[in-house]
Image (tube, rainbow, N blue to C red; front, top):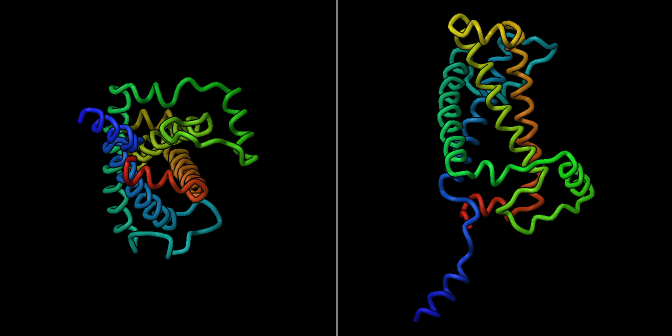
Length: 206
């Protein structure tokens, strides 16, 4: 009976993504989509480029509604992000999954990815391109939150406002950081389409 149980356990697929990781991933996805869509509506109310975003791609309907969606999503993103970072740090996952990361390893894996030869044999371990991309997203979201605080409470966060170069500079930093996040999402979706089992792993955990 013991042998049978060991055989059954060996046949059971290994856990790739624990529940907490899947939960924070999908909560983050919802928060980011809400923030981008409502942020585009806020941008349309006072654009600093010679273009506006089609209304169909925005959320909120009007400036006041967009601000309410944006602030709600901001809190969701911030709280979920803090939980994600805390669990990663205290569990040691951040160090195991994202480091070490060397420029040589990154360039090697990037070259393999551009040639379509980057291996995905074990989804439990990230290659150098994935490590760099996920670390970039973490830092980018931190920048989004910090610049967003300046736009939300400019007087209260006056020191942070000055560090970012002023209110208008913070607006542009916020816009470009959010644009970079949108670009990452687009690339991420392409990679998921190319390797669909990564989506199944993020849904089922195995």
